Length: 92
Image (cartoon, rainbow, N blue to C red; front, side, top):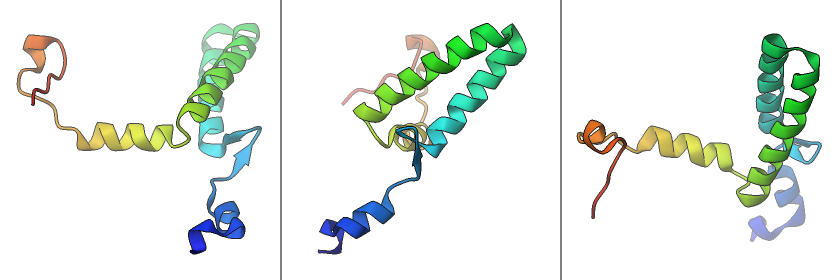
């Protein structure tokens, strides 16, 4: 029952700014700063808008995208035939 409470749901959400969780904004900031140091100001501004748009679409598709990605990468084992197939190949 507490999970249906509006206050509980409001307080258990991640902190958002600009419609995205703060962790997404930190990724955008890091990638934009990297492009600024590599290419300059104009490409960095364009890259910032592109990164924001892409991560906003990922957030609408799956709000816990980075959590799912990190759990998948840490819990899925590598296969022995990785070199043969050019990637991990799992058969049932």
